[in-house]
Image (cartoon, rainbow, N blue to C red):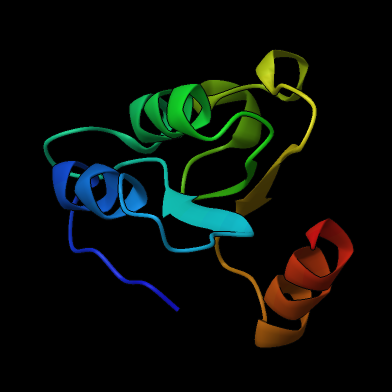
Length: 91
């Protein structure tokens, strides 16, 4: 697992040669939001799967219609089981 405290750091880590199967990101990251991070990451790693997490209503944040294939949205609060289910379904 690779961790980053903000969007720019996450993007920097995604520029490495490490294998990344899934990007899990909060939509409201400081410096570079989760959507911007995902879009930049997919330029470097086409087809990278992304799980967005948000405390806002799904339609207010991203909207299911705006999610590209391989992207999902999980709204807070959620259980660890729900998180694990989403991750397992995506990888």
